[in-house]
Length: 191
Image (cartoon, rainbow, N blue to C red; front, side, top):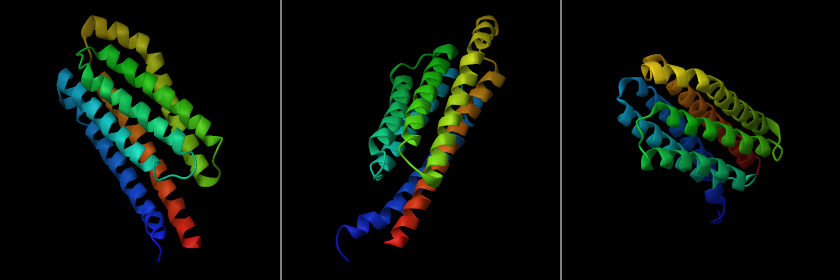
């Protein structure tokens, strides 16, 4: 066995681990309704930062669309860093960062779908559509949220909805990575 075969055969396992890690991070979003605003901002920042780093590490293992996958991970990492570097206690700037992250990430994934084929393309399209739908949902709800937060402060229902949006995006991203790992495993078996 030569030295180049071993890393190629270990890629599916590493991408699987990345997918599982991002799915597990989605569980952290469930903590948001139970923590105060400052802690919640730190939780969101940490979750996004960790997911972005994991996504970028998984992207380095890809042959196709490596740059776009790295870019999607970098956008997630940047969103997490914005939360951690500027831990504002205001709910609306938090929503704005996540809305921008989701929409930008969906655009990157949309371009990525043009460069791949098969089941991975389907899962990238699902991930892009999910992030776009969640981003638009936040964008449409932003004006309503502005009024509610201005009058009453962030309600537990709003925070819980926000937590679900993060969790859904993470789960779909994790599932995308699991599909990529499955395709890698299949390709390695055919060699």
